[in-house]
Amino acid sequence: MNRQPSAPDPSVVPFVVPCADRVTNLPPYVFATLFRMRDDALAAGREVFDLSVGNPDVRPAASVVGAITEAMNDETWNCHRYGTFNGLPRFREAIALWYYERFGVRLDPHTQALPLIGSKEGLANLMRAYLNPGDGIIIPSPCYPAYFGAAHLCEAEIYELKLREEDGYVPRLEDIPAEVAARSRMLILNYPNNPTGGVCDLAFFEKAVAWCKRHQVMLVSDAAYTELGFDTENPPPSVLQVPGAFDVAVEFQSLSKSHNLAGWRVGFVVGGSEPIANLGRLKSHVDFSLFGGIQMAAVNALRYGARTVKENRETYLGRRNQMVAGFRKLGWQVPSPAATLYIWARIPRAWGDDDFGFVRDVFAKTGVLVSPGSGFGVHGRGYARVSLVAPSATITRIMELLEGAGFDWS
Ligand SMILES: Cc1ncc(COP(=O)(O)O)c(C=O)c1O
Image (tube, rainbow, N blue to C red):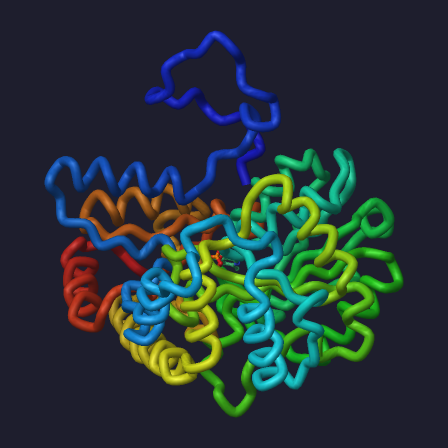
């Protein structure tokens, strides 16, 4: 991860008042850089295949769209006004019911669940609620890049906990140095994992809960992909299934990928009532919760969305198989992930560790845009992530273009 201050943005017109250091010194967000490459190419009239962000191309269920429309036209409830800070009780009740049915975890909907304007918002605000400048935060590496910027805005000390391919991308907690454990207030875990597709079992969560209790560190489980595990006999667990987890853990969920609602911005956090209350308190000063119509659509998604989730899982499994087979045919020996909508692989030898160079070269020759591993943390260097966000016919075309590029993929 590049921790140098960002280069000046040429599109920014100088202003008389300088920006706060915490923003000036923000590392560049990898996807903003990629989007600029993509948009410049589109403006130049090039054909682009954007497999960089995990941005679902499938549409939400008709009933979810129907639910927001119904809410907007409801004469008995004016959802266009400001809502309540902690979200609609109906949404919190639907969250509690879904958690019980999916994980067997009982939640008090009034104190242990909080709707969020996407889990990205909630993760960043939880850090603001719990990290003082100089406090430590342990972030897996590679990881969802938004963790870095959010921690940076809190002026927290980041420790990147290495995820190794040979361990299935589950960290060795014993790798964490004693002084890091002592200064840290938060450990983030994300299973199923973005970008690696790694999964963990309940036994690992048990170890992690015990470690966090021993070191008095909050366990933040980012569970955005629990519904996209391909082994349906062993669906990914929730950390809250661990007895006593509520004393030390919170868990974030997102409807972005499971229900194709990425642009709507809807997620939630569940777990210990104290951190939920503190996050709610902070948020009451910075936002006004989600639009009521979106919350009613989310209620519909949680109650009746099992079919959408199943179809999504099957779609991503089919695409995974097609892409893995296509890459291997080219000579790029990518692993086959057990979950998520990503393929994570070491880049072909010809590029060494230069993942940005690999991304640039592939994009320049083919218009296919993937993500460079070093954007996901120092331990992502030399890797690339490919998102499964194109339909089968497009994947076929992408493979033809990649083959035609004439690279050595081995
Ligand atoms: C691991 C992980 N957490 C959180 C998010 C953010 O999801 P949301 O759309 O709910 O903000 C993402 C999005 O890609 C993600 O990959």
